[in-house]
Image (cartoon, rainbow, N blue to C red):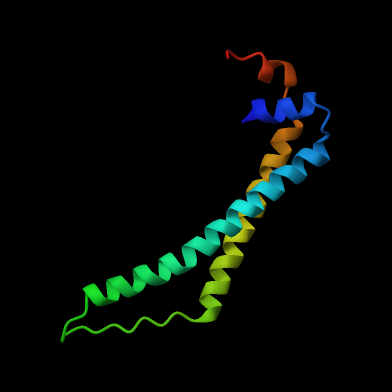
Length: 103
């Protein structure tokens, strides 16, 4: 990963531009993950409910909107924290050492 960031530095990107690229890519991937995970999670819960349904045990899973919003918020927060930590690492990359690796 440091090789890609070092290449961007050699091409003339400054730290701010690299950080913005990192944030955009991460936000895009996190958003796609959230969009795909919400219906998949909902479907999995209902499949488990159907599989475990019998006369002695009947579950009626009801997930409130606040639970979904909390999960989305925590996911975005974790993504932001990881981006901030990666942003610090990008600043300290040694371009010569990163680009000198074997091809």
